[in-house]
Length: 360
Image 1 (cartoon, rainbow, N blue to C red):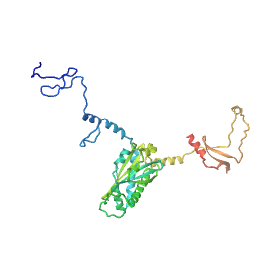
Image 2 (cartoon, rainbow, N blue to C red):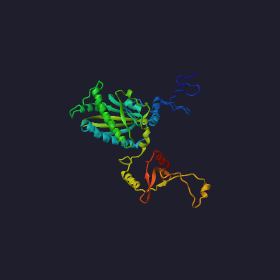
Image 3 (tube, rainbow, N blue to C red):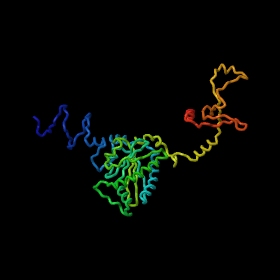
Image 4 (cartoon, rainbow, N blue to C red):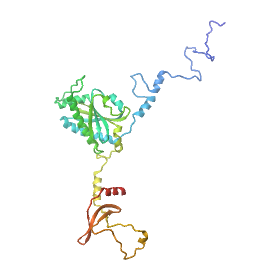
């Protein structure tokens, strides 16, 4: 019979003490070979989930690896130059449009998923869907509420030095939409001029929307370029955001990947003029062919001095002018003073141009 003062110990099936404690009442170390189980807090830390809003928004763990693969897109150096040019053009055109002192600045150029952008648009706003005709695709231009009321106030004669009054809780009126549409058309015309040194593009306004759901021009997971422009008119102003999906820019991607070489997008006017001058002064040997015949090699080997070759050409037949083996044009042979001359009868035909390109 066990003594009442003797400490009792429960044994599990393996003969090991369960919930054994040391003399100070603390839990003992896990037994060798025992598997350690992670608690919920450690699992959340590993996966990068945080329920506490006070912690940093920076993702860690597996989530950061996944998200980094989704937002890492290639950089297009020439596109930055195009938008810098757009800022300069908009500064001038909006000054003429509003008859006010307008300052346009480029806030940022970033890559974003299209679905994330639609969810981040602060409402109310006006979204303009435009079409790039040469690229056969669409883009999106967003005008925020502050700029809408500022433009309406400026165009309708609002006094300077006072901020535009915002009226919440109602949709935009027909007059407000019409004035904003005129401003958007000015911006799209400047965008056409900004792309013109690189490639000719035409941006046509397709429609105006106030609900982002109706402005879906791409799939939510598709990548896009987001350009944020700030427009200031003294103490008034707002923001314009221009979004171009990568699918829209794909036909001109190679042009956008090239490095910037100067104000003329890589063109050197001095070198071009020098090259043109040298080409105009270059001498080229031109041959006049009266007739051609195919003759057996044996007959050619039997040629003797005094043999007569009969040509199929007549005095009125056209002769062919060639530069090397490339046919240029046709003419008629004659005489001017004591010199044999050829009068050109036809211009360079398309077949001649194709033959030149083929031999180059």
